[in-house]
Image (cartoon, rainbow, N blue to C red; front, top):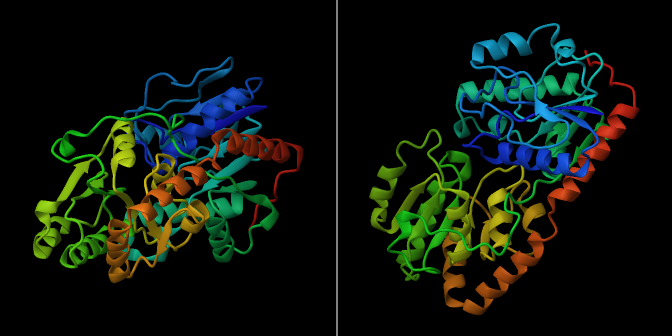
Length: 385
């Protein structure tokens, strides 16, 4: 097969979508080196990373960059063109991973990764520009994609509820896995925690944005402290997102600004140290397509408190404490319970390690390769109208 694969979000600042594409293409090229791979460092006109490497960072006998564009404008001109399929040399498969979806392909089988539709659930969770761009791509996938890859059963079900015209037998769940291949790594302590002892901090990983629910988490943390909880700091590890400009002033109003550490974006090595050394991993997100910080924290033995919303129970199973993301009192009480019962805390960490072993990138890549083979063997889906 000639496989065209969107790697546009796999640059140095990659987040969940980028890690998914990065790990899949790494494992695909190892699993099936007999195929030809065209990797697209820019894909469509919705997402563009000017810092993408000049040369493909992925190795293999027949692995190479497809067209590379130096500006959003040149990428747009190429990808919306009527002749794009021929210019790509008509790959057997083209796999979109960044929400954007082409509609011009008449021969190549178009595979579309669907992450989630949190942007359509609550207007306060994102910006208007992001909402419009994401929805446009997802909607076009419902009329143009031959197959959809959903990253959880929750995402699959949501997609089919909103777009019932899409054939149920052409959407398949392929789970993401941890970005970390070695669970024995110790990591590197972030400078922001140089004065914090290992095992003496709560951790919350994720971009600071409304959907991740950090505002309620600090409310719960303040309540936990007021109830006499062990006065260890709350560490937020993640870059600044959107619509949270007043977060610092909210900490001030709660009187807990001195107990909250904001690391900003952390390296993978620093994140490993945080997971391995936190007292507990707190993930109160309101809506997730998957929830990588839950899985990755469990991989390194972090006792995990998270939510029962959307996809999270699929990830956590019975190896985490699942809570209502809106119940700040419930979160405070769960944190208090964990600091007063060290045995329960240690058992939770051990259960998480065992649960995390069920997610394996090789298995996900095998499932994706089987989907590609099935897609190529079957006729293209008739374009919906």
